[in-house]
Amino acid sequence: MSLNTYCSSPWKYQRRKTRTVNVSGVTIGSDHPIRVQSMITCDTMDTEACIKQTLDLVAVGCELVRITAPTIKDAANLQEIKKRLIDQGCQVPLVADIHFKPDAAMEAAQWVDKIRINPGNFADKKKFQVREYTDDQYDDELGRIEECFAPLLKVCKDRQLAMRIGTNHGSLSDRIMNRYGDTPLGMVESAFEYARVARKYDFHNFVFSMKASNPKVMIQAYRLLVRKLQEQGADWNYPIHLGVTEAGEGEDGRIKSAIGIGSLLFDGIGDTIRVSLTEDSIHEIPVAKALVKMVEHDVHMGEPIEMPELPYDPFVYGKRVTPKITVAGIAIGETEPTRVIVPLHVFNAVEHKRAQFGDTFPDLVYEGSDVVEVDVDNAQELNGLDQIAGSRLLTVKDGCKLSPHHAFRLLVAKAPQRHLIILKDTFHPPAVGKNPDVLQTLLHASAQIGSLLCDGIGDGIFVRGEPGPGAGVRLAFNILQGCGNRIFKTEYVACPSCGRTLFDLQSTTARIKASTGHLKGVKIAVMGCIVNGPGEMADADFGYVGGAPGKVNLYIGKTAVKFNIPEVEAVDRLVDLIKENNKWFDAPTVPVSVE
Image 1 (tube, helix red, strand yellow):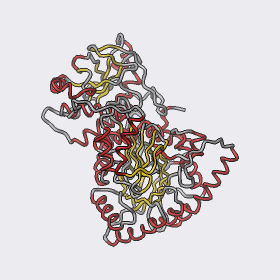
Image 2: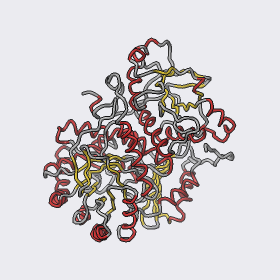
Image 3: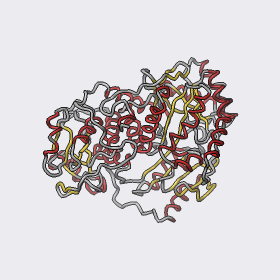
Image 4: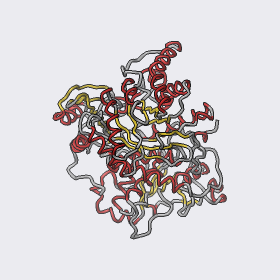
């Protein structure tokens, strides 16, 4: 089967064709607009706060609002929330977020417009058991799922509700973990267990999601989902909800979200999106709308001169193999880190701050790197790449009519593997003195370059959309960090908060960053509750997880090692745990800054 089959076209924007899912008048999929949604963060029993946060979200353009329903009592209060919103003239569809509690889902289904279930925990309690399942035992498990899930499907069908079957990388069932592992395939199979039951009961008003905190895992899972849906047949054309879960806050959270969501949107995958930031929910909406605007611009980009096979496997990450060469005294290619390249005027502007930049000082100057610029709109130039002697640095020539995402794919498909690739975020850099929109510039660079890095393409990156010298260098390194390609600071995985959260995530994350932000190469997960905690912390060094009101559990990897620590002590105890495991070092005396 062709590697191109996960999307309509990997060479130009062409949106995936789906059926329409109706959420109380808000239509998702088909030719309908890409919908923007979010989730409120307050206690579901605090009716006034829920109403205020919902109205605030709607005011900034949110089209669907999700509210957690951790208990039957919370689910029952959705009736009052819904009634009060309607009384105030707000008709926004409400989505009940369900984990572990089928009975809460049954109650919520009486009042909301859509139910989100997590197939990893709807009918399963996470026990972290390792066991082998025979085929008969596995079939018995599927029968148990159907028995638990069928009543909710009947209510949703009778009330014409919608549903999201939302897999999270961090909360796969023990059954899936033991048969498929903590993998994109396991994520897809987890969702399919429930989708098959839904179809058996002739319920089709649902969407899929495959969320992960690691953009590479998230991208691979969604691609595999779409391919598996195509293999099932034309009537498995369900819409897709996109999101990078636990993306974090600030610039880092926006970059990581743009990498994962943007990559899939460029390939025509995605019908509704949620950007998950550890901030007030209203700040998620401008980011999501900007991502939609970005891909809408891509619709009008030019056509590639040819559409070859993809030169890499889009379902498994693998760095494009190139030789190591030396440019201006700097090694690049092979196993060297992805290099940051800047124009001469940027290098000159930041050179006097070299000590402050530390590990984030740019590696190469573009004008002195003898880069070969290729016109990918010219068949003769593309076909002549094998005539270029030796190993050279290649990039796409400015003025290209394609988006960088598609242009560099074409360059890689045609270039011999001995040539190295320098990625650009734009082929139309802003004129001197012009200051483009900061958010749009950050998201565009992250999505264009990050999507390619997550496909293993790129030996160096050249960011020019951000005109500020220090800001441009910072953005380049933060994109590399967001993709996991080059780590220069502490990595944080932080959930966006909701009514299940057992402490204030924003202030807690800030305190943890203040204490640990200098620990280059250490990955720390900050989770408000247990729902996705252990799984999303699988590749984290340490975890800080809400265990009970006012109490915190600390983890090494996904194993809890310290329990019920008073919240006021927990950050200090986290630092102690890092020290006990020989991951601590004192902050440098010279502050590292790339401002």
